[in-house]
Length: 145
Image (cartoon, rainbow, N blue to C red; front, side, top):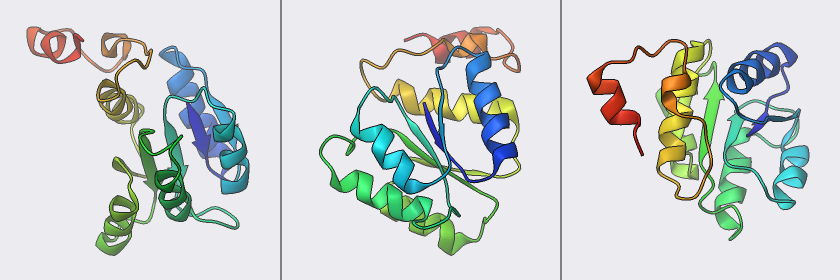
């Protein structure tokens, strides 16, 4: 997983949540660094903050969708800015999801798992590993791939 966010606290929180359920996380502070990491491949999904120095997460998302190597990469935009126009801009740019800050760890992990289920061939831990998800017949049915 790639997380691009210039806020060290948010980077740490997201990284810990994803590492806890078995993901390997690459952390970057800006869009330029994110592009450099993505150029090398091996990233299953990208979580992009909207407000970063230089290029915004929305602009980065748009550029990633234009590149054949990242055109189908699952992208989640994350921001404290939750006005409708900003959300529409992110989704129009090609984001697969938009998560509001502050977020709950369980919601972040569940949404990311949902994005990964749509992409064939991506290895990921099972959703049942989420500490906030109870094992019921309904959740088992949803998480079996």
